[in-house]
Image (tube, rainbow, N blue to C red; front, side, top):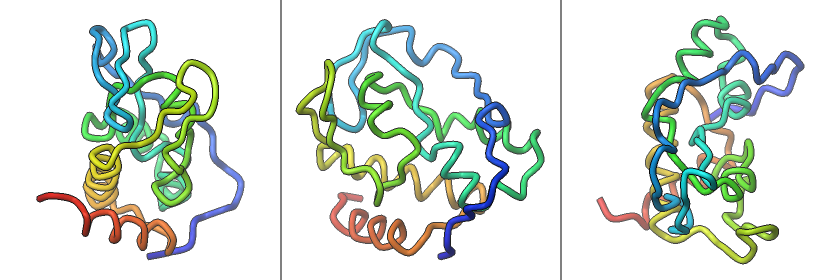
Length: 148
């Protein structure tokens, strides 16, 4: 556990990703189970670039940041308005509620919360990223409720 880095220096352009064809077909949002089409799909960084920066990535070279941005384990197709609702939030910061637009009223399902926690834990472990106390507590609580 560690406090998030809050100094200046974050630039979204340092974390560009290549998502391949993740939004080429219709699918189901992993967080809310809402359907999406290629027109309503965004590629989500499960651990956002800003969260990675605040959790240790601030020390990385631009090339390492771009490697992180391309990590397929950290990329998932998502309903566009759900992804935008999540923004750069971690599991302790994002309530899983989508309150406006085409996704108004959607909420994260229990399976979606487990997906978020499991993938966050795997990605942060792989990349040596930290979790602040609120995130660590929320991850532990969520994982304790998940199957497997």
